[in-house]
Length: 92
Image 1 (cartoon, rainbow, N blue to C red):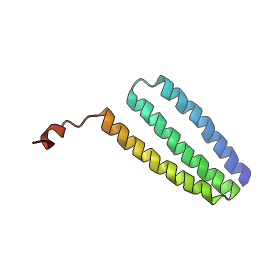
Image 2 (tube, rainbow, N blue to C red; image 1 turned 180 degrees about the vertical axis):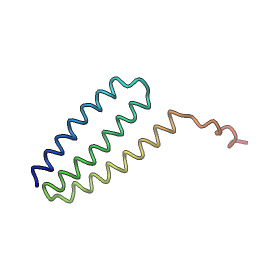
Image 3 (cartoon, rainbow, N blue to C red; image 1 turned 45 degrees about the horizontal axis):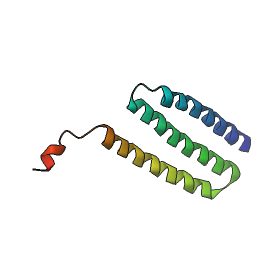
Image 4 (cartoon, one colour; image 1 turned 135 degrees about the vertical axis):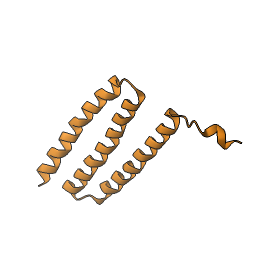
């Protein structure tokens, strides 16, 4: 079963190569951000597979931290990339 986990982790690692192509060639910032989100999600999946393959509970904790960081980066990107048109009304 350990070999299956490692093969799946390798497949996900190859998937990151496709994501890197999208980061470099993405026509818009949103495409690039989605590819970066793919990196975060894939890193979490790889860490969970390796944690299961090698019975290391610490890797699960690192995967949880990566998942939290990925969600924070998306929120920060959305707040910076798309300004809120209703922001002027809050100052009144």
